[in-house]
Each structure stands twice: as C-alpha cells, then as structure tokens.
Amino acid sequence: MYKHYFKRIFDFIFALFGFLTLLPLFVVITISLYVANQGKPFFSQKRPGKNAKIFKIVKFRTMNDRKDKAGQLLPDVERLTLLGRLVRRTSLDEMPQLLNVIIGDMSLIGPRPLLPEYLPLYNEKQQRRHEIRPGITGWAQVNGRNTISWKEKFELDVWYVDNISFIIDLKILLLTLVKVFKSEGVSPNDSILMEVFKGNESNK
Image (tube, rainbow, N blue to C red):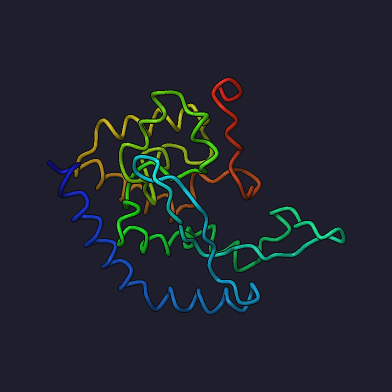
C-alpha cells in the first residue's frame, strides 16, 4: 500500500515543504552561481526514471565552461569553482531536484538516476532498479555512496525495491542528513565524477 500509493503522497508533501522552507537559500545560491558561472546557475541532463522513461534532472551547476587552447573543456576538477565545491560538498547541488520530486519524475528516496547509456549494460536483476521512481538519496547512498562498487550499489538498489516501507524511507532520510552533515561517503581526493559503469564484465 505504501509503495504504490502513500509513498507518492509522502514525496509530494515533504518535497513541497522542503522547497518552500529552503526557498531563501535556493534564491541566494541561484544568484551566486549565476554570477560565478557567467549566467548559468543550473545544470540539466537526461536520465532514465521509472520504467526507464527519460526525464531531465535539474541540479545546481558547480562547474564553469572553461576550455583549453584547442577549444576542449578543461578537466572537471579544473572547472569546479570555489562556490561549486562548497555547494557540492554540502550536497546543496541536489536541491533543485526537489522540483523533480514535486512534478513526479523522482522520489525523495530511491535508486539514484544514472546515465541513459548505462541502460543496455544492466543485467536482468539490475534493470529492476527502474521499477520505481529514482531518488535524491537512496539505500546505496547511505551505505557507501561513492566508496562502494557498482555491483554493490545495484544490489542495494534492488534490495530497496523489494523492501520499500515508510520505516525504511524514514531511516534513509535520517541517515542521509547525518552523512551530509559529516560529509561521509564522498570519494577520496574530492573526485568529481563516479567511475564510469562499463558493464558487468568490467565491473565485477
């Protein structure tokens, strides 16, 4: 009952309340990033959602568009602004995704939405992560985040799909707040992107 009906109600109410509560901070960050990123405070990207339906995820832009002499974008770590680093380390770059939750593309809690090009690489079990809406945070994020392997992440995602409950969602929400406060589970050396998923044969 919770999985199919009440979870969406829970998402909408808490996402709307959270967004309205954080609106002053949202405006301040938007204006600051607008200045820091030459008028581009937001970043959007296509991601697969429930049933692998493609939608556009929205985040705060933490990197600028600086290029080298050949016109190629510089490495991510060189394009990350000081403000962007702060926003990323405090997970505030995820705040605009509350809008994705409000309109129904995402859930507060669920498997993180990954790249569309990963879809053909999943095995049958891993594809089950798309049986529900993707989340801003999830079971994998509170059990290692960027410090665990792809195989472990997918196993945790599928476990969550099979065990969704209000109590588990509440536990994940509380653990997420603790980890954000402590900055736990972030990749060493402030790496910007997770390792690319290349399929199960190369990510055992």
